[in-house]
Amino acid sequence: MNIADHIRIIPDFPKPGILFRDITSLLLDPAVFEETCDQMIEKIKPWNPTVIAAAEARGFIFGSVIALKMRLPFVLLRKPGKLPGKTVSYEYELEYGTNELHVHESDVPAGSRVAFIDDLIAIGGTAEAACKLIEKAGGTPVGCAFVIELVDLGGRAKLAPVPVETLVELHEN
View 1 (cartoon, one colour):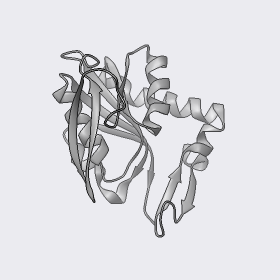
View 2: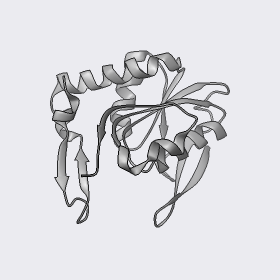
View 3: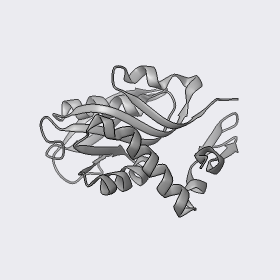
């Protein structure tokens, strides 16, 4: 099954000149959605994760299913003000300003081996922040897995030496 065939390309969204990669079409077909998660599981198994983590919002879709199928805890990495308990946070730079990711301080057990899951890696800022947050919270990021990689944007390089796995590699043009 070619997962790339199930990803829609939407031109000029959210602004002119952007080619948006839409995974909602992939989610409409349960067999494709399941196959996508199963392929990601096969890619991350060699890392022997003890925890699966994902950032909101689309990472939650894949991360929760992968954690459930692997029978592992699922940890939410959220934007400020979204978690009710005491959190650990990591602030990171965006093209215009900054953002933060938060995790409940008790959700990442010391020494846990955490696989980070998301739908897409572009410039790598969110994934890099996720890895830094996982470390700050006491875990070890053992790898990052994505459905889609926009290879021309070089996000993978920001994550080194953390291993990166992707299912679909796309180019900007």
